[in-house]
Image 1 (cartoon, helix red, strand yellow):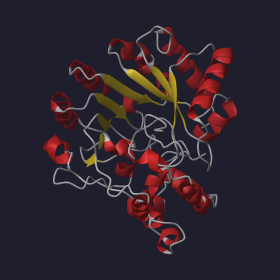
Image 2 (cartoon, helix red, strand yellow; image 1 turned 45 degrees about the horizontal axis):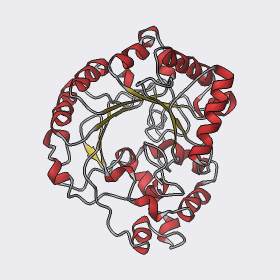
Image 3 (cartoon, rainbow, N blue to C red; image 1 turned 135 degrees about the horizontal axis):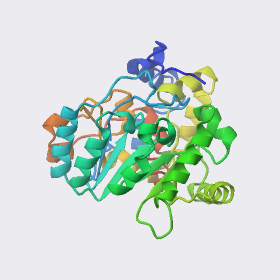
Image 4 (cartoon, rainbow, N blue to C red; image 1 turned 135 degrees about the vertical axis):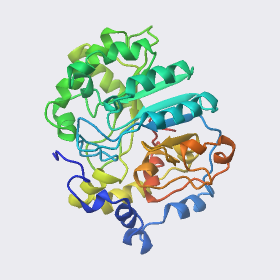
Length: 351
């Protein structure tokens, strides 16, 4: 288990151009596998364009208290990219005026941004219908200053979406580090105490599962049943829904695929599992992703590859929804991850 990000280790794959070179490389250049754009065309999908904007996803910083082996953000304690209050103010202006009904805060560990609580308070006042914070759970137990996060989230009606790789200690700690499972369980119990995930409560608690290796996630409904049964019986924990997310070949997961000599096999599996029915519901069709420094992307994954929106509007300060709604979505071979099998988005399977 690495203890530093790819960037801190000065690895080649910390460079987004290097990642794109691999994703556009020999497997696809040779014709062994079709480029994603050609797969879209062959299945009658054509150019990807957005529907109306529903979700504004804001990455408030890459700093994190964990260094997970699959992380497409390459987040960690050594990452210093943090959204400033000035950029948050620009985001708030868009939140007040956009047609988006969902605000999705992510990281890193978003709670580590020093202006996180201020931003949540101001954003909650804007009256967003669904206000999501994506938490790695362990941050709630990482330091005493975070112990009251469950109460803070409840006060502002935050929808908590929490990462938990598995309902067993071994598989979770393998992916996220020793001790992560026990801290995650404690955090979930604390969230349950204030009403999160409890039947009849308005406080929404969802879990996110992504595979620990080079394979696609199983059936979302079946996994949700397994998670609910195990967590309830073993720890008395309750939650609302489970989202399954496919690991995309980006950053640390791409590094893992190459180091374990699974890259070609994994990309082939993604291409073979391509599902044209998933295309119309992928996250880039109803989402705008905002980076810590205010740049705009079609999705969180494009953000991590440095692929800005193909539009005259590229920064939150210049936000114009009508112009962004007419853009062509930027794609590359990593997009196979969102269209494989039942599809994948930040809200889980899409078909």
